Image (cartoon, rainbow, N blue to C red; front, side, top):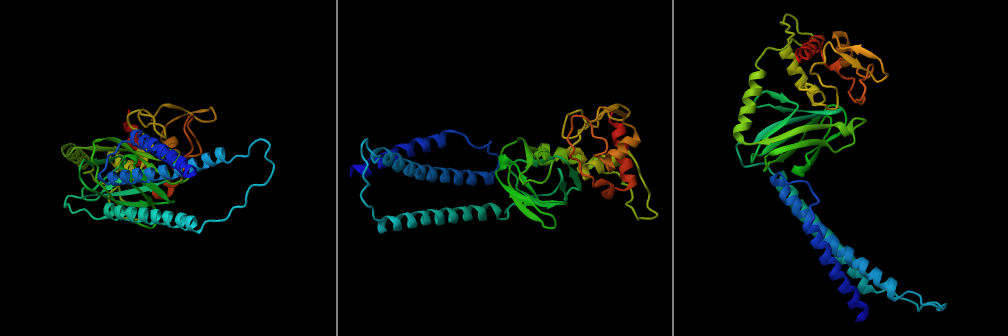
Length: 349
């Protein structure tokens, strides 16, 4: 009995200590979504089970290491040992039951958090991921923004898309994560419960700029959200430049049109307009000023420089900034769109 009682007692002691530790130490960021509550509960269940299993293994291991160690002067072989069918059956059946139980519990949580909301007020947001930024489109309101703004306590349906490689949409405070895959639309539902400022992060290695692929998230009350919608809607109520190939359509090259294109194509996810340092140089006060390049030379940020920076970003790298801007805009943007963006940059003084 002593051979069993001691390690069992150690198992109980270690289990209590570890369980109390996991209950008191906050291992996750602030919880800010309804779906995250059940995920955190699942995490606690897994940690408790893991604590007991770890304590059981380490207790028997330490007890055996000390109690059955070779004594000084003992040179003979130990007595032969035979297997125990009952023990082998037990350590096969018990882990199987644990795995099946956790799988069933996890599947139920997954089905619950993926189920459509019964609320008629569900907000729809189209998320587009590309190397290395995000854009967020609100189809119901005709708004595209580099910033994700959400109303608190309202279910949001995210439609995830990617234009180049696989990315992964992840806000740690929301707990849920979903891949954005080229050619496939993935859906994820989240109901934010805590107002605050967070960040969307890419959780899938997607290239050299992966670590810089972030976007701001603001969860606000309904009144503030409606104010933001009204402001964004007002800013987009201007005609836009005709697309390439559309003959007879008017062409408008203005700073306001450039602002819209900068939002639509994700430029403002990397370049600030207020002097804040992001992944790329700020656009505020850029035009007409001297820029120091990576090789130590300087250049004036005129229209030629800005156009070259858009269509061939690696040619003249600004000192202190990584070479992460994709060279895709020369194919995605028309000449008029590029010129409109330049006009927008020129207006940011």
